[in-house]
Length: 292
Length: 183
Image (cartoon, rainbow over all chains, first blue to last red; front, side):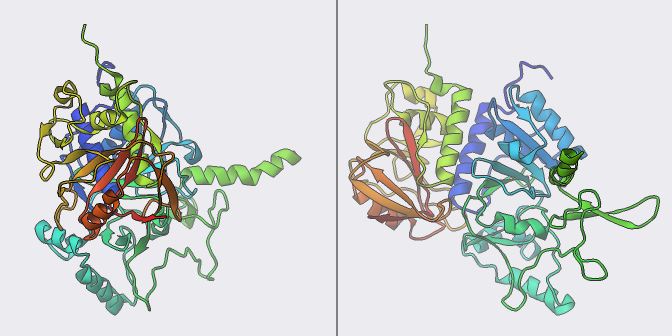
């Protein structure tokens, strides 16, 4: 690809359409605004929705962080970051959450609380939470407009009848500003409360499904639940009921990934958010450095 | 030699878009718009958002004739248009598109030119998504009828209109979700 390429890869008409769409998405919180998702030089389903948003948003001098499942070094993050570096000269990249102006992420929201001057772009595979109960998009749009989520609630209730709790582990249906229910992308339950009254604007892009939607800052985001079956996040308890900690940094307040130690065959838990884990490790080892 | 203002360049439009995104994400924030000296900031806002895919109504004839071909937008009556350029000192004489229940985004965005977003006789307090608690604003050059008309337009959420108030150098947004109280 030549360096004489248009800044941001997309032509200005494509960017303008995404910009107009994103403004309507913020004005109607949680509503999936359709747009004519462009062909990108990677397969749909590999984060093209988030990528198109980032390319329409970003400008020279800004600093970007790209995350895939909490890590900046996973294959999707590495490729998207390389593509943006190639097509957006003058844009900086970082792995440190606090240094980023824009964060594009797949499947996680950083553990470190985001600030008002930061912006989070989430890659979305399936934007419509009603698709499990209604096949026709025309009918789903009507149900969304009327904020009629009774069939979705019945689906959750069936879970309770069968399993005594709601078994959705990720993509947890979340109601925005008391009206639209969104699919918050495949983030774990752990991350859903971070959307509620978030200081940062959250934009969600589904490239294959051609939808953009938003959770504006300081906006209610409430996971669907029942009065007697409240929403709860992952507990990460061990056999004795104690909260597990990260085997690397010792943090006992982060979302943990489970690994199997190839030597011992035992389960090992580590922070999913790589930058958070590094920060905790530095913080923990800092006093030793001073003493040493 | 044909000289084109910087508001038509990709770089300035990216920065102005981010100002608009900040403004609509935080109703009550007054965000600076990069614009050409001697030309209203509203033209820079239109240049950022419009192209041949959308339509613009200019019932008061505020836009310079030379800017129309650059915008590429088609003209439309205010009742039909995607974007409407309005004069704040005069109450609206039209009914903008409010969208439909399945497609509330097919509603108009109003760009309303006012005298000042920093001080003025009209004091309002805002509440709603994007506002941390509430936000106080003072605006000069906005006819009070605009707010009561807006109430009628946005009362059937998710239907409604989104307002971008623009003075000579900045923008303040009132999306349909914002609750406005005159104080």
